[in-house]
Image 1 (cartoon, helix red, strand yellow):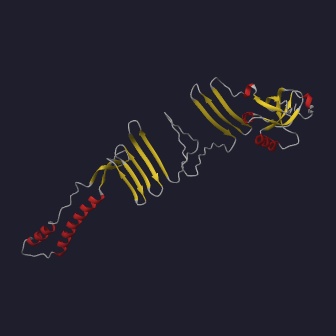
Image 2 (cartoon, helix red, strand yellow; image 1 turned 135 degrees about the horizontal axis):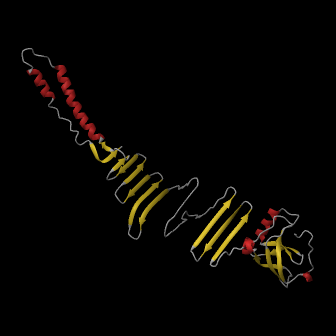
Image 3 (cartoon, one colour; image 1 turned 90 degrees about the vertical axis):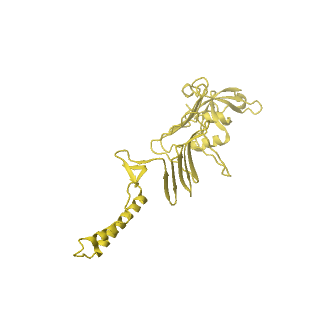
Length: 303
């Protein structure tokens, strides 16, 4: 039962130390009262001597772990207080937790937790196993935010892991950078750079790897360099070299045009036995012959 019918004892009747419970007033909005307590590091308590005292000082750490009751008829966290002799005012020296509320789960471990009807936040650290967990869960709008601000724009957020980094998302992973993005796989001890992927705003994207392959994109287009380039993986064949093929087709067309022109202009001579035709054809065939032996790429194959 809460302090609804409690009476405040006289100055001489207050105990020098004791156990009390955090309470809230019956005539105030709970949310506003709790916010005031958080700002002023004070709470209201209900002692085992049926005494209610308001504006009792409590240190910040104990206030963070304290539980405020849902209504004025209920009791919140248990606290230990002492009464200052000169002022006869109680001061809270520690907050007591129930067995099921204990934040000490094992030796060398600590837990910082806040629980609400709509969710909870938790930090767990275990020195024995080198383990730390930060968790936030809620009904809706759950968020974990890390902010690093520097007025000169030189802020740094760095994560170093001697092992593996796993990132999982049920929906999507979004990365945003306003200037550039750089991804590198390397072994600093060996000075070996496996690959580098970099995008610079206004310049473009560049990919390079240890095998000499590279991809570059700019405002004018894309350039792919590699020892071999393969498109598809089934029934692939060498890609044609466009410029080489065009050159040879031009040579072939010139030869054909010459022959066609010669035949069109040729006038038969009845008594020469085809000698004049032979001369015309020979002249046309004197044009260079197309060579298609070098039109296929040795580096690029296409399915």
